[in-house]
Image 1: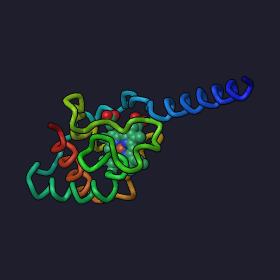
Image 2: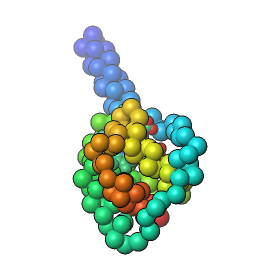
Image 3: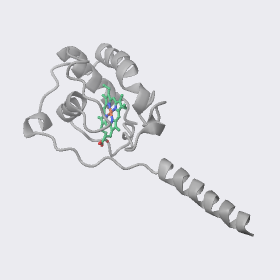
Image 4: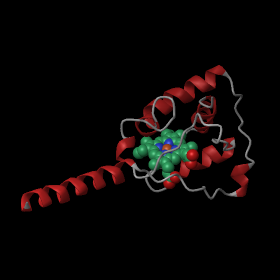
Length: 134
Ligand code: HEC
């Protein structure tokens, strides 16, 4: 009888842990300075820049955000916060807002000011992020 109780308690504890592991916090709204909200992307949103942005994304962002930006990269399981779904119709950041988020990061989201220093690379990456929307 006693062993059954102990087993039951252990089973409940394991199930509880599994559930808290699966549930992720949804991203909170970002506080983005006004000048970024309306900042104009100086690059044309053409194939060349989207392809360049894709290469940068695969190197720096894919591990968490996943190949298609839906938030299922190999590192995503270990994140406490869901990294967002870039293909969603709710993914409505402006170009400047995407630049701000990428450069500054927040909590588990790294910042890329020094890792992606080139302006052209940064804006190409923004063009690629926008291309992921369905
Ligand atoms: C180590 C994992 C990780 C990497 C690598 C990463 N991100 Fe993130 N990203 C996150 C997490 C976690 C969030 C949610 C953060 C929050 O809301 O506090 C996030 C949020 C975002 C958001 C906002 C999504 C939303 O809906 O609010 C954008 C845009 C973004 N990341 C772009 C990028 C780009 C571009 C790169 C590569 C240059 C990148 N991320 C690399 C983990 C990562």
